[in-house]
Length: 132
Ligand code: TYD
Image (cartoon, rainbow, N blue to C red; front, side):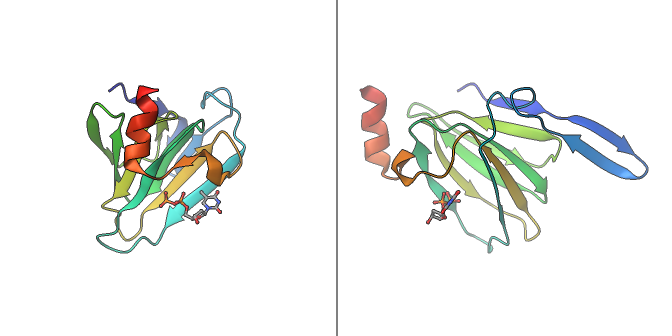
C-alpha cells in the first residue's frame, strides 16, 4: 500500500515550532471540516470504518498514536509521532486508531462536511465494495 505523508512547512526556532497547512496547497483538497480527537483512554481503539468519498489528512499535533490502514489487500500500522507531518487517507481505506498517549491530540482535516451516509462501518461491506 502506498502511504502518503505530507511534510508541512515549519518555522522552528528557540521560541518553538510553527507548522503551516494550506488547503489545496499543502493538503490536496479544499478543507471543509476540521476536528480533533483527544483524551482517549488507555487501550482504546477507535475508527473501525472507511469512507465512500471523503479524503482526510491526520496530524498528531501532540503526543503520539498509531493508525492501522487497510486497503482490503494489505494492512499497515503507522506511528504518528511528528506534529510536522500529515498522513493522507484516501477514500475506501479502512482505519483504526489506537495506542493514544494520554496527552495525544489527533487533528483531522476533511474534504467534506460530516455525512453519516459516507461512512462504511461494516468490514464485510467494505470488502464487498472494493470488488464492485
Ligand atoms: P466517528 O467518526 O465514528 O469517530 P471515530 O472514527 O474516531 O471512532 O465519530 C464519533 C461520533 O461523532 C459519531 O456519532 C459521529 C459523530 N461525529 C459528528 O457528528 N461529526 C463529525 O464531524 C465527526 C467526525 C463525528
